[in-house]
Length: 285
Image (cartoon, rainbow, N blue to C red; front, side, top):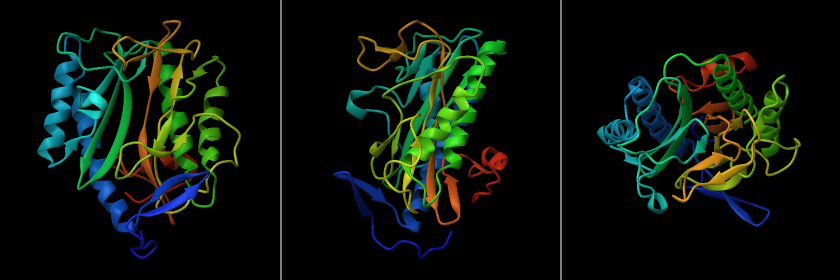
């Protein structure tokens, strides 16, 4: 990545009355550091997923990893949230609260969502895994959700429009023979010196709309897909979002930076090399 493609620290681009943070090349490098911390934390938590482990124990693993790298868990204390990860199981779509009394069982699906702050910059990523071997239905749900994320990431290219990403995510999901649902309202977001920034990134929509994608824009792309009706309910804890009909959901997320050379997936250990290869894209690792 060329060092001179942006100069302000940071720039703010105005779109539809909203201010969108545009990072310098150096700031994107700092975000890559935060992204690698998140990637390592998710890998550590994923390796610990097994029957009998509690979501509270998984949360402690993530926090220990983040702090050992000199970073800060970005979820912990965020509007009062009590975990360093979101641990969402089965029909829970997002924002599940870690609980030392809640143990995983064989066959559970768990979305592990994690964020970290390093040198003032954020990384944010999520993955859904099954405890043990997934059923054919769960494997298909997880696969389509992950593939839709990568399709969206592949459209994070300079010169495009924000909804090019949204449309790419949607097209993967609707192309499946099974009638999966795409969760409404919840979606991705800008990210940088705060975890959640403009613009909001829906996982559906017509292409060619929204702000122009420019080098220095960083986004968290996160599709949420359901087996059944995508309608949602927020539980009384004020955080956990579940499917209204009780069907299972999957959730994936990566933080990506738009660069002159193409998308750079900051929360993937390889920079997105493997995930973007099917789209003919070779990002920086």
